[in-house]
Length: 204
Image 1 (cartoon, one colour):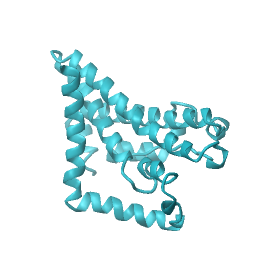
Image 2 (image 1 turned 135 degrees about the horizontal axis):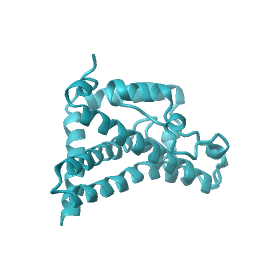
Image 3 (image 1 turned 30 degrees about the vertical axis):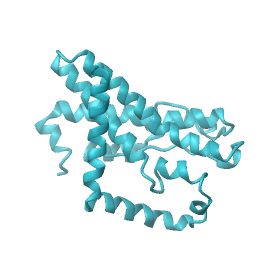
C-alpha cells in the first residue's frame, strides 16, 4: 500500500482535498497552455479538444489512477511549435502554466487568510496553497518534459542541439538528483518558502 493512499483511511479529508486541488490546479495549468497556444497561432489544442478543464482530457485515466494511488500525477497539451509565429512564443506558452499555478497560490492564500478564524476552511485553502506552491516550483525545474526546460529551450540554441532521444535520460537523472541528493532539501525549502511568503503577503 502506498504512503499516500493510507491518508484515505487515516486522514480522508486531506486525501480528497489534495486530489481535488491537484486535479483543478493541473487542469487550470494545462488550460492556460492550450488557450495561449491558440491565441498565438497554434490551433492544435483546439482541434484536438484540449481547450478544456476536463481532467479526462488534459490528464487521462493513467494520470488520475496514479493520483488516487500515489498522490502524484501529470497533465499535457499537444503543441505544434511550427505553427507559432515567433520562436519565443513557445517560451511564453510554457511559462503561463506555472504562472497560472502562482496566481492560484495567491488566490488560495487570500481565501485561507479570509477564513483564518474558521479552521476547516482555512486548512482547506491552505492545502490549495501547498499544491500550487509545489506545482509552481516543480514545473519551473529545467528538466526535459517540464515547463522550465520548455521556457529555456527556444531561447538558448545549444539546448535545441541536444538529441531528443536523450531527454528521458536527462529527466531521470534530474529527478533522481532532486529526490535522492541534498538538492531535495533545497527543493522542499523553496516550496515551503513560497507558500509561507504567499500566506504572509496576503495576511498583511
